[in-house]
View 1 (cartoon, rainbow, N blue to C red):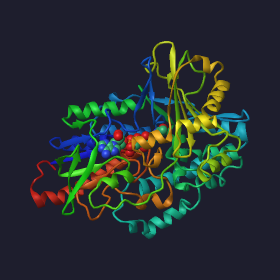
View 2 (cartoon, protein in one colour):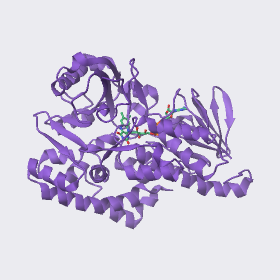
View 3 (cartoon, protein in one colour):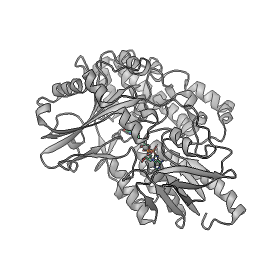
Length: 491
Ligand SMILES: Cc1cc2nc3c(=O)[nH]c(=O)nc-3n(C[C@H](O)[C@H](O)[C@H](O)COP(=O)(O)OP(=O)(O)OC[C@H]3O[C@@H](n4cnc5c(N)ncnc54)[C@H](O)[C@@H]3O)c2cc1C
């Protein structure tokens, strides 16, 4: 049995790790159009040799991640996770600032000290703990074979109980009076490219879980996870074809049976597509691509600087009118005058990233799609952001030795649908059974999918849950065609 993966994102890497652990004689080939593996889980390199994560920085669900690596046979010691506590600082334009702490009682005290709503916070945690259990088992950790699966009375009742009809921000009004607290516990829908004022409250479980399990960091950078997986897969005999763009996924008689690279056909018993799904649809024989709504885009700035940076590891620097800023970006499709700005200062906990005496800094800003560097320059966005960094870190500009930048159009050119950073937008009509599934087409056998635009959702450990669902779905189907063809040796 020979499986071809299109793309070497975390979805493919982890699925291949699971498969080769369970079925050591399986042949796996991963085709990746870039020179390195990892997709969005990658790094930016500076002239002085420093490196910083290019995309993911916040490790959520650490216990799930550890369990996932263990169940795929990767020794626990391979990936070192460090806890970041306080999780992060939230800082407003008017100078108000507060922290999130891992310890729930300490956090309740911080919320009481700042807003007089410590008990409201305790109530929030108790209720969300219940909701998370239901939400995780019923909607995240399972696949769907048909859209109608979601119309089971039990699931509909659960959706009502979870108030899936409310937005993440609206739902926070049930718990908190202060607008800044409502924002603090709903802005995390931005992690998956959704406007907190429009994204269903089901996704509002992210801030709860983040508070419960904390925010973690992979020693060496999040990108090093992809490198570790690649090394282990090579050791297990997986073949990586890098700089190999798949042009077509061939389907004959209702079965995917090959991929085409540089005009050459490579036969496979099954094909898994991992590139951004709306774009993958365009490569598959006989499939009419559907219309999808992309998630939000991001402007990313990466710096290497002399000396240490006096910022917390993670910080959200927010406009006083956060709602207005979200409206400008998501509804008007314009650049906000004072956008929300997330900074990541990993050198504070990891000296391996930059040469002695220097540090790296990552800045992410949610922005409308389709913008180029020249648009940001014309609008003064880059100067505005550097100016804000200057107020946070006195003397910042003079200490910068190199700056790199990634725009929504860079993301689109890389192969993210419409330049959206996080897969298709997290809205109800593109969630759960309404999202592309691990076995996306009933009429095409042996064609599978995994990745941020496939159920359950974007975010590294969640995409890895998608890999688990994929392997389960493949196993169901493989058994059927084992009897059929007798071509499968090991499954
Ligand atoms: C700026 C940013 C910040 C983020 N922050 C976080 C965070 O803090 N925490 C978190 O958990 N998640 C975060 N994410 C999300 C996370 O990075 C993604 O959900 C996850 O990495 C997506 O993995 P994937 O399996 O969908 O593959 P992708 O990363 O999309 O990789 C797909 C691969 O397929 C390749 N490919 C595409 N087309 C072809 C083709 N035709 N032939 C061959 N190869 C092809 C691509 O080159 C790519 O390598 C962030 C993402 C971004 C962009």
